[in-house]
Image (cartoon, rainbow, N blue to C red; front, side):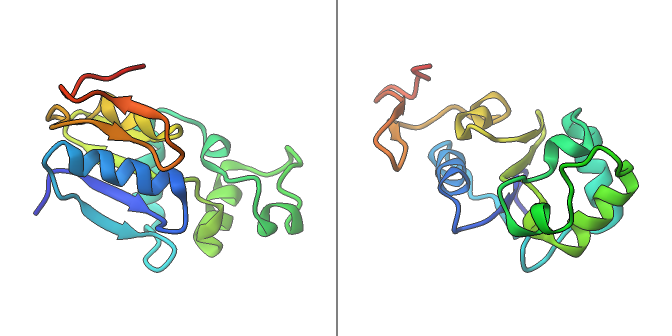
Length: 141
Protein backbone atom coordinates (compact mmCIF):
# COMPACT_ATOMS: atom_id res chain seq x y z
CA UNK A 1 0.00 0.00 0.00
CA UNK A 2 1.25 3.45 -0.93
CA UNK A 3 2.33 5.97 1.68
CA UNK A 4 0.56 8.67 -0.37
CA UNK A 5 -3.18 8.99 -0.93
CA UNK A 6 -4.84 11.38 -3.34
CA UNK A 7 -8.55 12.21 -3.38
CA UNK A 8 -8.83 12.61 -7.13
CA UNK A 9 -11.22 13.78 -9.81
CA UNK A 10 -9.86 12.79 -13.24
CA UNK A 11 -12.02 15.47 -14.90
CA UNK A 12 -10.05 18.20 -13.08
CA UNK A 13 -6.79 19.52 -14.57
CA UNK A 14 -5.44 20.54 -11.16
CA UNK A 15 -6.10 17.05 -9.86
CA UNK A 16 -4.45 15.43 -12.90
CA UNK A 17 -1.37 17.68 -12.57
CA UNK A 18 -1.10 16.86 -8.86
CA UNK A 19 -1.32 13.13 -9.52
CA UNK A 20 1.40 13.36 -12.17
CA UNK A 21 3.73 15.29 -9.82
CA UNK A 22 3.28 12.51 -7.25
CA UNK A 23 4.18 9.97 -9.93
CA UNK A 24 7.14 12.14 -10.99
CA UNK A 25 8.54 11.60 -7.48
CA UNK A 26 8.64 7.86 -8.17
CA UNK A 27 5.56 6.91 -6.16
CA UNK A 28 2.30 5.41 -7.34
CA UNK A 29 -0.25 6.74 -4.83
CA UNK A 30 -3.45 5.21 -3.59
CA UNK A 31 -6.10 6.98 -5.67
CA UNK A 32 -9.53 7.59 -4.19
CA UNK A 33 -12.07 8.69 -6.76
CA UNK A 34 -13.99 10.65 -4.16
CA UNK A 35 -17.00 11.36 -6.39
CA UNK A 36 -17.60 7.59 -6.62
CA UNK A 37 -16.34 6.73 -3.12
CA UNK A 38 -16.79 9.77 -0.86
CA UNK A 39 -15.04 9.83 2.49
CA UNK A 40 -17.05 9.01 5.59
CA UNK A 41 -18.01 11.85 7.92
CA UNK A 42 -15.16 10.85 10.24
CA UNK A 43 -12.64 10.76 7.38
CA UNK A 44 -13.78 14.14 6.06
CA UNK A 45 -13.59 15.77 9.50
CA UNK A 46 -10.07 14.31 9.98
CA UNK A 47 -8.91 15.53 6.56
CA UNK A 48 -10.14 19.05 7.33
CA UNK A 49 -8.43 19.03 10.73
CA UNK A 50 -5.20 17.62 9.29
CA UNK A 51 -5.16 20.31 6.58
CA UNK A 52 -5.67 23.01 9.21
CA UNK A 53 -8.37 24.72 7.16
CA UNK A 54 -11.96 25.66 7.89
CA UNK A 55 -14.84 23.60 6.58
CA UNK A 56 -15.86 26.47 4.30
CA UNK A 57 -12.33 26.59 2.78
CA UNK A 58 -12.83 23.03 1.52
CA UNK A 59 -16.20 23.88 -0.01
CA UNK A 60 -16.21 24.10 -3.79
CA UNK A 61 -18.13 27.18 -4.82
CA UNK A 62 -18.39 26.96 -8.62
CA UNK A 63 -20.73 23.96 -8.81
CA UNK A 64 -24.51 23.78 -9.06
CA UNK A 65 -25.28 22.41 -5.56
CA UNK A 66 -23.45 25.38 -3.99
CA UNK A 67 -25.82 27.85 -5.64
CA UNK A 68 -28.94 25.68 -5.44
CA UNK A 69 -28.50 25.10 -1.69
CA UNK A 70 -27.72 28.77 -1.00
CA UNK A 71 -24.39 27.91 0.59
CA UNK A 72 -23.02 31.41 0.02
CA UNK A 73 -25.03 32.50 3.04
CA UNK A 74 -23.01 32.44 6.24
CA UNK A 75 -25.88 30.91 8.18
CA UNK A 76 -24.76 27.26 7.89
CA UNK A 77 -22.88 25.49 10.67
CA UNK A 78 -19.78 23.44 9.95
CA UNK A 79 -21.80 20.29 10.63
CA UNK A 80 -24.39 21.33 8.06
CA UNK A 81 -21.70 22.11 5.47
CA UNK A 82 -20.05 18.73 6.09
CA UNK A 83 -23.45 17.10 5.65
CA UNK A 84 -23.88 18.82 2.29
CA UNK A 85 -20.38 17.71 1.18
CA UNK A 86 -21.21 14.12 2.07
CA UNK A 87 -24.54 14.31 0.26
CA UNK A 88 -23.02 16.08 -2.76
CA UNK A 89 -19.32 15.06 -2.98
CA UNK A 90 -18.84 17.49 -5.91
CA UNK A 91 -18.86 20.19 -3.18
CA UNK A 92 -15.55 18.84 -1.81
CA UNK A 93 -12.68 20.81 -3.31
CA UNK A 94 -9.84 18.76 -4.69
CA UNK A 95 -7.31 17.30 -4.92
CA UNK A 96 -6.58 16.44 -1.31
CA UNK A 97 -3.25 14.66 -0.80
CA UNK A 98 -2.18 12.79 2.32
CA UNK A 99 1.51 11.92 2.81
CA UNK A 100 3.73 11.17 5.80
CA UNK A 101 4.72 14.87 5.69
CA UNK A 102 1.18 16.26 5.86
CA UNK A 103 -2.23 16.67 4.32
CA UNK A 104 -3.01 19.46 1.88
CA UNK A 105 -5.63 20.75 -0.48
CA UNK A 106 -3.35 21.01 -3.52
CA UNK A 107 -4.63 24.16 -5.18
CA UNK A 108 -2.53 25.12 -7.00
CA UNK A 109 -1.23 21.67 -7.86
CA UNK A 110 2.41 22.45 -7.01
CA UNK A 111 1.43 22.66 -3.32
CA UNK A 112 1.90 18.88 -3.42
CA UNK A 113 5.67 19.41 -3.74
CA UNK A 114 5.70 20.72 -0.14
CA UNK A 115 4.54 17.38 1.26
CA UNK A 116 6.11 14.76 -1.02
CA UNK A 117 8.66 12.64 0.84
CA UNK A 118 10.72 12.01 -2.33
CA UNK A 119 12.18 14.57 -4.74
CA UNK A 120 11.01 14.95 -8.30
CA UNK A 121 12.80 12.56 -10.67
CA UNK A 122 12.85 14.94 -13.63
CA UNK A 123 11.17 17.87 -15.33
CA UNK A 124 7.47 18.49 -14.89
CA UNK A 125 5.29 20.74 -17.01
CA UNK A 126 1.61 21.27 -16.23
CA UNK A 127 -1.02 20.50 -18.84
CA UNK A 128 -1.27 24.23 -19.62
CA UNK A 129 2.46 24.40 -20.41
CA UNK A 130 3.62 25.98 -17.13
CA UNK A 131 7.03 24.64 -16.11
CA UNK A 132 7.04 23.62 -12.45
CA UNK A 133 10.14 21.41 -12.08
CA UNK A 134 13.35 21.54 -14.13
CA UNK A 135 15.30 18.61 -15.62
CA UNK A 136 17.26 18.22 -12.38
CA UNK A 137 14.05 17.78 -10.35
CA UNK A 138 14.32 21.26 -8.80
CA UNK A 139 11.19 23.33 -8.21
CA UNK A 140 11.07 26.44 -10.37
CA UNK A 141 8.65 28.49 -8.28
